[in-house]
Each structure stands twice: as structure tokens, then as C-alpha cells.
Amino acid sequence: MDRRSFLTLTTAGAAGLLASGGALLGSAVRFLFPSVYYEPPQKFKVGYAKDFPIGIPTFLPQEKIYIFRDEAKGFSAASAVCTHLGCTVQWFANDQRFHCPCHGSVFSADGAVVHGPAPKPLQWIEVTLAKDGQLQVDKNRSVADSYHLILPS
Amino acid sequence: MSALLKDLYRSIFRGDPPSTDKGKSELVFYNVWLHIHPAKVRKEHLKVGHTLYLGFISFFLFLILVVTGVALMLYYHPHPAKAYQDMKDLQFVVFLGPFLRNMHRWAAHAMVLFVFLHMCRVFYTGSYKAPRQFNWVVGVWLLLLTLGLSFTGYLLPWDQLAYWAITVGTNIAAYAPLAGPQIRILLLGGHSIGDQALLRFYVLHVCILPALVIALTMVHFWRIRKDGGLSRPLWKLDADSAPQGEPPRPGPASAEKTYGLMEVVTGKPLFEVLTPAEEEDLVFSYPYAFFREGVAFLLTVAATMVVSLVWNAPLEEIANPAKTPNPAKAPWYFLGLQEMVSHSAFLGGVLVPTLMVLALLALPYLDRNPSRRHADRRLVLWAFTVFAIANIVLILIGTFFRGAGWALVWPWAATAGGHG
Ligand code: HEM
Ligand code: FES
Image 1 (cartoon, chains in turn yellow, red):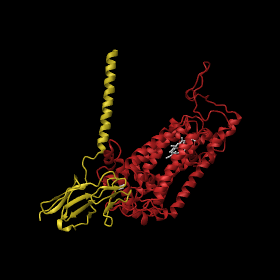
Image 2 (cartoon, chains in turn blue, yellow):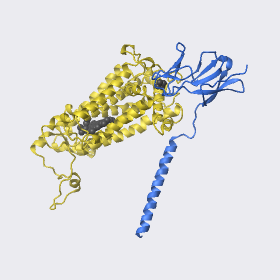
Image 3 (tube, helix red, strand yellow):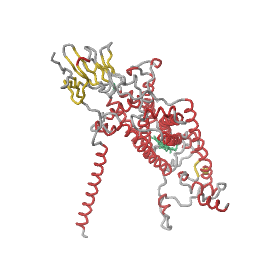
Image 4 (cartoon, chains in turn green, orange):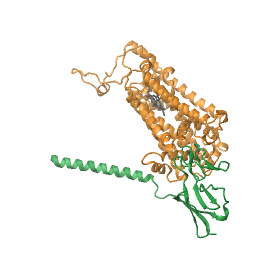
């Protein structure tokens, strides 16, 4: 074997090894990400409009959301997940604010950060009317804090 | 018959009886578990004042954790529907259940503490300096693994502490630059905390992390030998001016002689001739070193047992995603971190901890001062002490001065959150 073909061969061999090593690593990383997520749906019905009191936010523990019903503006929904590190915020009627027990973030009634480590306001999510007349919430759809669902009366 | 027994015995234990010097050496020599020790060790290394046996105690606590942990595995299912009930069974139904669970929990707490103290000992005796820089690095990884084992461990009971710790912990990971959210998915095996997440943390806790600890501990111990044994105690530094435990370096070869492989590698003649003074400094590992290590082991086990008989490991209410306890406190060793993230998730949860770890890893390479004497090390002693005290102060604030809603309060007003 001459010098040239020896070098070609070793280069090809090294490249081959590197490529298979990379493929192996890539597959290993891919393996760690599940192909199917068996998780609760992000879009769900929360009940009929009449079930929600006016003025006091209703907490849905399973879904970790607050449903608001305003006399004039209609329905809106906010995620109860603190934007800091994910603890569940609690509504306090006395100061009309959300408080997070983990690191003390406080949010106003419209979700804005009053103080604390939370970097972002609470997430507002879309509320729509399902065909059967129930309210429906989709956690995957963020909306502006001005978003409200007004039902025809 | 007795000849047969004798044969059997001799086939297992080959050395002379350990009543002679040759037998004492062979005992160490022929035994795979013991030969991590040299046949003879320096007297000064057995002195409690040098190591305080903190590294040994860390190791013995790890052994306790392995034994009690395997026992707990027999009664634990890593599934949200079963895990908490298994804990209750361990508390009230399983024979010795509470005792084993207590031992596992308290040994875990103690291990975090003792590994930290061991690191401080190594620092203050300057034992991370050449040639031991790399063993310090191995040690830092062992510290991180110890914390990782604690974190993955206290999730397993699936109580409130577990659920909210995993929530906060994995959300901190999500603040990491570039791949943050992906890392969170990787840890949880999904987007939310459920059976996949518990299973992943379980596998990390009982398999991956312990395997890494065992592997690195082997490197750690092997390295101590290869770095020329333990560092010499500080009080010996003034006594002799010889280089401080430098690793053997090959000496100049002589053309007149043929060298064996051992001699080439170690640079020392195969049959070392010790001066009477050097000989005077050594004792046989058997029984002197083994006896002291045995005492340290028994004291560690006994202390863990006593604590486990008196205090029960905490267990909070069953995990409730809808309700975060108030205050929601991590175990004490993470309260410094919790205090920091309460100011900023990225700075306190990602940047500062990363810089702290990098500083620890780089320490032996940045500190190029060869002297181990305290008088020559003012600056670095000062820096490390500030580092250690800052960590302790943050932990104390988190433990005693934080109340509901993580507000600053006086210790007597602080409601104890879940810690344990
Ligand atoms: C699982 C955790 C650890 C275990 C089981 C362990 C075990 C040990 C043991 C048994 C020794 C022998 C002397 C003694 O008892 O002090 C030792 C020495 C040493 N350890 Fe560790 N260690 C751990 C973590 C660490 C950490 C966190 C560091 C530093 C960051 C470290 C750095 C060292 C160094 C440099 C030595 C040599 C000290 C000398 O020569 O005086 N180790 N370790
Ligand atoms: S998770 Fe809400 S303040 Fe940290």
C-alpha cells in the first residue's frame, strides 16, 4: 500500500468512526425524549357560564387555572402557575392580589407582577364557548390580558 | 476432615497468619478489598487531627445509604399512585420500616454535611495542591453527585415536599441558557410532573447516580495512593523540609544497570532502603489503620442508628398539585439556593451556582502558590472562608428567617415549612 492510499484509508476510517459515534450520541439523546407524551389534554371544558360567580375568581385545582367573570367584560382565564418557578399562586380577597408561597411573588388582579422574583405576568389563556354551551379553555393558547369572552345574552 | 477444612481455608487466605510482619503485609497484599491500603502507612496519617476522618465518614455514610436504600427498594414502587402509600406502609406496617427509612434519610443528610466538611478540611490543610489537584476535581464531582442523590431522593416519597421540590428544581433547570426548556423535558420525561418524571428520578436515584459515585470514589481512593498517600499534616511541614508528598518522579537512569518495569514507572528501586528514621515513621496498616477506620465506621453506624431511633424522618401530606404549601421550603442544604432564587431565578438558580462550581473546580489550578502553610496563604484562606460562610448564612436565612410567602421574619415567627 502506498502512502497516498494509506492516508485516504485512515482518513475515511476516522471519518466513519466519527460519524457513527455522532449518530450513536444523537440517537441516545433522541431516545431520552419520549415519542409520545401521555399527558392530560391542554384543552378542556370547565362548566357552564352560570356556574361562575361574578367578581370572585374561581380556582380550578385540577387544571391550575383561575376563571374570572366580570359583570361588564365577560369571561377570562389565567394560569395559576407562577411565572417564576412554577408554584401555584393563591388569590387573596383582602388585597385583591395573587400571592406565591414559594418565593413571595405578588401579582395584581390583572396578572401583572407587583413585586417578587417573577419575571413575567401570569399567563392569560383563551376562553371560548363550546358547542354544548360550556366554557372551554385552551392552555396552549396565550392571549393578551385584555382578552375576554362576552356571551350573547 | 480437618485437613480438608485447612485446605479450604488456605485456598482462600494465602498469607501467613498476621502475627508476623510478613503475615501483616500479606494480609493487605493478597486481599482485593484491603490492598487499596499500602502494607504500611505513616503514623501521622492515622492522627485524627489531620483528616478528622471526614472522608472516611462520608464513605461509610454512603455504604449505609446503599444497604438501607436497597432494603427500601423492596417495598417501594416508583409510581405516583403507589409511592406515597408505600411510604405510609414503611412508616406503619413494614417490620423495621420506620427505622430503615429514618436511617436512610438521616444518613443522607449527614452525608451532605460530612462531604462539605471533608472538602473544608482538604481546603484548610492545603491538600488540593500539587500533585493532588485532580483528586480535588474528582471530589467536587462527588459533592455534586451527593447533592444530586439527595435531590432525586427526596422526590421519591411523592409528598408535598417532593412535588414542589421537583416543580421548582426542574423550572430552575429551564432557566439554563440555550437548552433550558429541553433539559426540563429531559428530566421530567414530559411537560408536566407525572409518572414519567417520578420514574426518571427513581432511575437516577437508585442506579445512575450511585453508579457514578461508586466509580468516582474508586478513582478518588486510587488517586490518593498514586499521589503518594495523604498529604502530610500541617504540623509536619515545619519539621522537615523534604518536598511535601510529591508523587514519585522517575530519577536519572544509570547506564550500568538494567531496570525492571516497576522501577521505570515509579523511579524508585524495587527494594527501597528506608532510613531508620523513616522506618520509625511507619506502622503496619494491619492492625493500626484498619482498627481506626473500623472505629470510625462503627461510630458512624451507631450514631446514625441512635438518631434514627429518636427522630423520625418527615413525611408531608400526599402530593397535591393544586396547593403549594406555605411556606414551601426545600431541605436545609438547598435553602441557600432557594434564598438565591427568591431574588432572581436565573442569577440565583443558574449563574451564581455555576460560577461557584467552576470556582471550586478551578481552585487548585488558579492557586499556584505551592506553600501549604497558613501564613503564606492569607488571600485564598480568606476567599474560601467568605465562600463557605456566605453559603452557611444563606442557609440560615432560608431556614430561620423566612416565613409564609417567603417574607423576612424573626426566627420565632417563622413557621417551619417542610424540611427533611
Ligand atoms: C462522596 C464524597 C467523598 C468521599 C466518600 C471521599 C472520601 C475520601 C477519603 C476516605 C479520603 C482519605 C482521607 C480523609 O478521610 O480525609 C479522601 C481524601 C481526599 N479527598 Fe475526598 N471524598 C469525597 C469528596 C471529596 C470532595 C468534595 C473533595 C474536594 C472538593 C475531596 C477531595 C479530597 C482530596 C484532595 C483528598 C486527599 C487529601 C489529602 O491528601 O490529605 N473529596 N476523600
Ligand atoms: S415560584 Fe412563585 S415566587 Fe418562585
